[in-house]
Image (cartoon, rainbow, N blue to C red; front, side, top):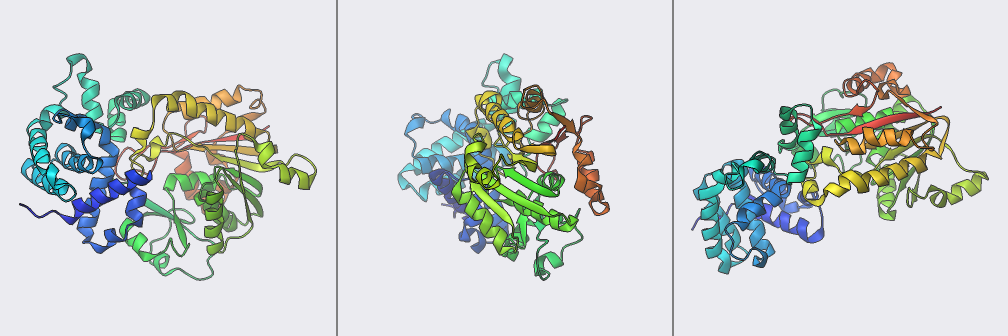
Length: 466
């Protein structure tokens, strides 16, 4: 009997907690004190296992179910332990004897009576894993798609859609097959009254406020986020938030817990802009979390409001009443709900929670409704900024074109994101260059993570009210 590694036990606990609470595995990992109590290498391996299993769970079940007599009768914790072992064999190429032995001990740790089942099933997985990866068990007419689906760890429909969305098969494979952890970037608090000890020892920022990449474990352990001295924000997300920062009034729709609120307020201070910022989210709790972090960082002057962004007249009733007319904003920034396909490395559960109908119908319908509604609140000469973290045209270019063709969009035109006012300031020249290389000939911004060093996939359109 081999000794169970602490990394595998931690990975199992994390995955079970995420499943039970409906959370992302990454968020559970971040909150687990036990992850900090074990060796750093074990902690990193536990994260690799937990995030990898979350990303490929449907493929792992397909493999395991071939050798389970009654797949639906397997207890959740036993199945999750089997997934970990199968993931090691299929994606990490761990030797079968090691993966099987550890998998059996992992099952035994929670269900001694299932150890025999685990031993039998995992030995069969070890014997057949190469044939499964090669898709030799499916008809030749479907073999290529199935093989790619298993290689990428994605549902077949999503795999097919990704392959069709990229100019070359190599580009699609580089994107979808990128299971490495995403690099971490942070944004520094411009309102700090004294230097932060962690940030002070970092090299110069890539552009004002943006430090990237930074060591994830060291950064989290430093306490810089608890002090609100910085927020974790993907580099491409920071570029979009920076470009959306303008003088005057701003309505931020879909503010969530306020990461982009934080970035925009900091960039406005660096640029010397006078600004009135209203952050809108559907949920009261997220509004509260946003304000709490901003106040902890010493950032004042942000109003929050909760409500449905598809019903802005109702949400902004009190604002309109105070002014005596419909409130218009110099900038309306929409961080729209989307498929999240540009952030799958950070939230690997996304592929298995999405449906094809979400991408092709439900999300674009919601996004277009939000854009049309937001357009009614943009002042003359103002800007409507639309952003998602998707890599699909249905949620980006096609969506923008549908808006522009609508009555609500008739008064707007696309303007290059790189021409945003703040990016013309000398100190933001590097940010302007980074935006420029990520936008197409229409000035629409789209980033795609195609290797381990790439930041997330984000889309942004800058629409100017004529």
